[in-house]
Image 1 (cartoon, rainbow, N blue to C red):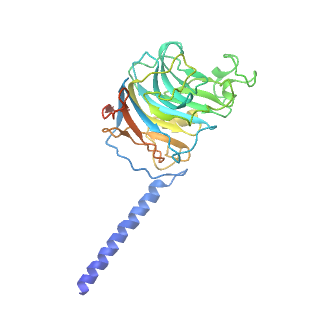
Image 2 (image 1 turned 30 degrees about the vertical axis):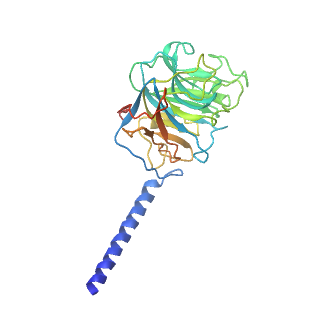
Image 3 (image 1 turned 120 degrees about the vertical axis):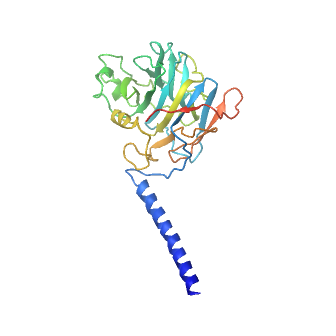
Amino acid sequence: MKMLFSYKRNLLLFIAGIFILTAAGFLLTSCGAGPQTKVTEPENGDFALQFTGAEYVRADITQGQGSSLRNKPVTVEAWVKTTATTLTTIFARGATTGAILFVDNGANCAAAGRVGFTDGDVFVCSTAAKNDGAWHHLAGVIANADHSTVHAECSCATIVCGDLDSDLSYRDEIPHIDFYVDGVFQDCAAPSSSIYPAGIDNGTNAMGANPDGVGSNLSATPVDFTGTIDEVRIWGAARTENQIQQCMRQELGVTGGVCGIDSSILEGYWKLNEGTGHKATDASGHGIDGSKYISATSANWDGGWVSGYPF
């Protein structure tokens, strides 16, 4: 009887020890500079999604998932490789106005194959074509802070100023949009109405397609994307040039800091590391998971998984 009692006691102590160690591990890995959300997601390696112009990923905005982006600064990031020369959607958020990364056909930018960013009011483009089949990092920013001292190329001496103050540059218009490729500043523009894109919460988050018609200011509605997309992020903050450069070549971690998963500002994060199936898990902690579809039939799309950007 004493031996049985001792065995039960030791078993209880062992179970209690495992519980304490597990709790301690969670606290150690979740502490950081900002609020953290424990994320559980299926990851099977470094994957990405290859689109053929006939598929897309839709991650609908559901009430209670994340925060409203209306009247807030926004940053959209993605790794992309393509050879497209048509006007195609890389990522779109909103309806009519919002935020969209696109490949151009030469009708909006100076040449086909350049990439761009628009809020549905004004757009900006890369300084050269990026449809060379290599990986490129794109970051579109809707900012509300004075960046006028950062880039001389956005001064009134070189471009036509916005409507708020003829003595100011685009980058001190509030708000304005900035565009970066591979961490290098490309262009900026001030919206005509000096307001944030009102439709940014009205639609969905979409990769490879533009189901809600963001970018009505472009020459046409961008069609479905041809190429590969990886590591899509949308922030409820205007990421600085240094932050973009520091974090673009690594996956975001759960330990906080500049390159951490801070769910108070990171509103969607799709690593696309599943490698199988028709789901794209949101790693931001908000649970805005995406579903993969075939455009023509809306049937589930299980394919498209290829090697991702080599972090």
